[in-house]
Length: 168
Length: 101
Image (cartoon, rainbow over all chains, first blue to last red; front, side, top):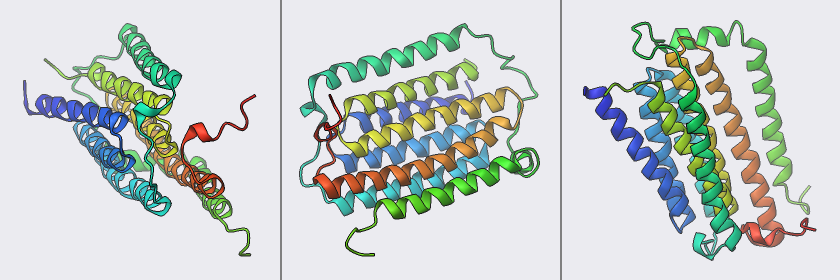
């Protein structure tokens, strides 16, 4: 058992525990902070998978931008009465974990029965920056432009959605 | 024990199940959005693992797109939550049942 395996075990256990705490924590702000941990540990798994650029982006975009957005909205809304999970309605309380865990188990069962390429091969893909970014500007150029257009549309949509009616 | 593709996919499946549980169980609209982010994150993890063991860059490129779309989705979702809060003074999903027959 080498250092990579120990790191994988640490990152994956911490990831699952943090995700569990997101689901179970009574306070939305605490859930958001545990979600930051989920994203950071996922970035650690990306590093183990040699996807360094994506690990960087994961920390920058998810743990940085998206979670700051979440916390910012929580502060703006200033919720006096938190929605505790044990005070929800009974079908959601019973059915949620049942469906979620059944779905996860079904995915896992399907993955177990599939034959994957040889995992112990020495020619694994190394995700250095050039190997990941070169396809972005050649084969996937149109997709990148469409994503840029989507982000512009989302920005305009957010402005329209949160606009005040009495204030033109 | 050699860590391989199976182990990463198992972590991804567990994370996806927990995200789905969060969406279905929690009644807070913000927590529902967080569950969505966890689902996208689980899909990303599976894609990066496939990219590593499938020996190609396509999985990581697709992950880049998913991250961009997740940012747009979080922004629009949070804007909808803010608009709902301005109308009803609540973020509890049980308070938005006017479309239920």
